[in-house]
Length: 365
Image (cartoon, rainbow, N blue to C red; front, side, top):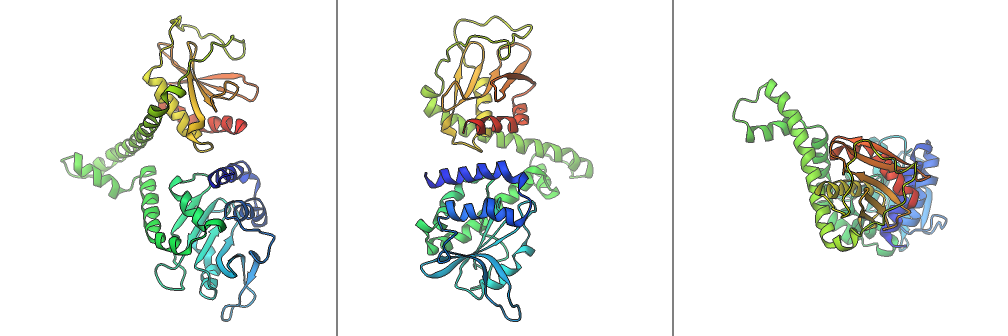
């Protein structure tokens, strides 16, 4: 299994088990040790590679332990401190890492709750761990740009010089991206003012701020959706011949093919509409949190536009019923292939069913 596939597999496990993992020990067993083993490639049961409960007395502090010390080439290279997965990580959780970092040869330190992995080094001052991580990996929302950097930390590809050289750029690029994401979720006054003053000539009053806060937020969401759709359209352009094969017309069943009142009689020719393509792109974007985009394909038919996993009719992710003149429906199938049609007013309403779409993907993947 390739490195990326192992990472996706562990991420899928984390998503499925996170709710059941409540303690620090459970977090170590369920998430942290598998990450060290399958992703970083170290034998967690070999004390020459992974030392659990590593102790190094620091000044007046005696008997303190860091959860894991990872050894490479006979020297401690990485320190790992774990916290329960049910809580968010805070810099206060890294107090032992700060102390141990200065007394060992390690240049890398990791603070994790099994879901989020924060990687630290000593960019600001030699032998003193930075207060901010240079890399943050969230297994619930993997940034593909970080995968090659994580791979450098693995045993098979460990390259400390390359890691440190890239750390400063990663640190600031990651921090800026997180700030942008926060502004998109909940724009600050400064963010709203920044855009308002470029499109509105009047004074930036309280009333104007309130009006433009919602406008900036709406514009940000639409911009992101358009960027995702543009990327997917580009991908579809190169895959179009394989992605849209005619779908054999299935025999209707009472459970899955209930005719809707008022649906027009369909033409004999299959016509793929821009709305169907855009709806497919949204479903595909949602499914990409669990599988590679290339595995999510579409087939159009006279009855509906099907989104499938692995181009397999037995692995339906969703169906787009967009042929009706007045009402569009998103069809979702349960484990028994029984379809429920959900009325939607706009294509962006598909995002409301993201959990159901991902659940369908996980059933097959």
